[in-house]
Length: 98
Image 1 (cartoon, helix red, strand yellow):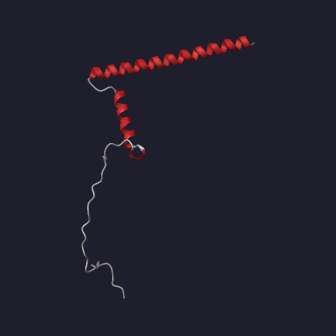
Image 2 (cartoon, rainbow, N blue to C red):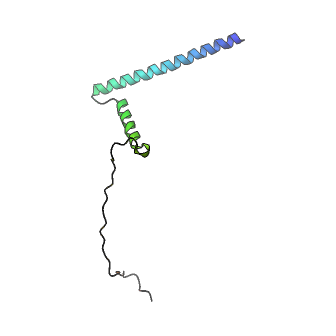
Image 3 (cartoon, one colour):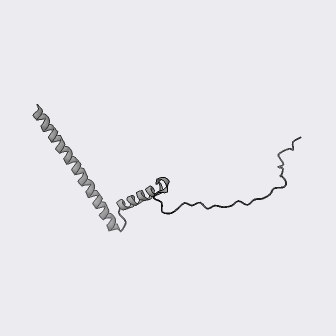
């Protein structure tokens, strides 16, 4: 009985290995064909574009600004002009208190 169990283990292990290697080959073929198609059209490959966007997002979301080289979103500080009000204007819809 243990011989049959070992045969099934080996068979299913090889079947899983074939499935994983086949999937990796298909993905690699799709990656290469996509890169070649992008080069034929004269555009940057999508893998490079996605990787660049990921790096930009990671750089902007780094904790404590560790990866930031310079401040990109520096808000402009504007001073407020002080205006002295000597008389409080009354609106016509408000009645004076008595």
